Length: 348
Image (cartoon, rainbow, N blue to C red; front, side, top):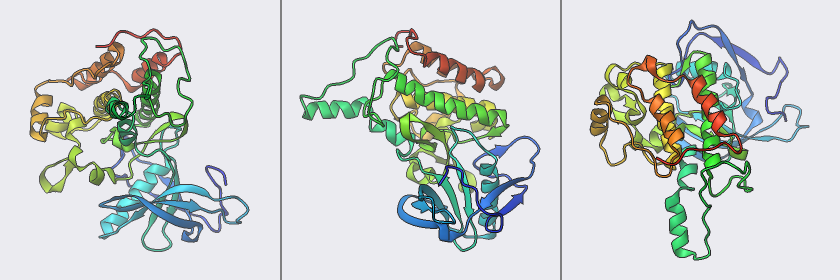
């Protein structure tokens, strides 16, 4: 089966609505979009790979209608409806996801709505979320392994990107400087695409990015990260959960979310990548983080992070939103830094 299968018109219904979801917010005038609807009989749910307030995410096999093509692995978000509003939210999210098409955005195949519970079908990213991926490859993990295994050898540090393929394993167990920059470049490409389409993500973080083959990272949000990474969110009035540690001052104070606030969040994501998945402002309570950010304090440079990369973070964290670097420029600079042989500044 192809990555984006086509099905007979008499089997696949096309639904069009004019609503927009909470995950991605349209800031231009909405237009009609459609998403494909598949028979539930084409899905064979396997194990549960995630769970949240919305329901569960299953690993599943998606079959073709004529059974002549091998099934493909997919991730299926199974909704746990509690009200009519949940069904409306489902339609909103599916409509927006169907309108997004980029190599660094998790691909949405369509939905199953012929039986309850309703389901969303996404491409399967076998290496999981980026935060967990980074934590398993951080220097602390390597240090522990070295303590128990004298033969363990770490990757030598280098101030120049000379080998475009330093790790042959997929995924590599250790991440080089080029690997970290490649991860950041993938996310920047996806965010530039969203900005160009006038979408605001509002919850960009490594926990909401997924890792596939060849260190390919795609932006996605199954909605389950709010449960798995509950300490990353701060509950305010009306049970609203906010990712305070990734939010700029204007979002914290005025609840204002724009493409510029996404740029601030990308700077935090860049910090997460070069900190190997550490929580931003670790050691601070949520209230203390609010005070730090609103008082123009910034995160320190991660250990062994090149000065050029930290400078890029600082350009994302300019207090006045209109003075921040654009996502297009961020993506451009990361592409330059990823060039083999590119001289890199010393660490901070």
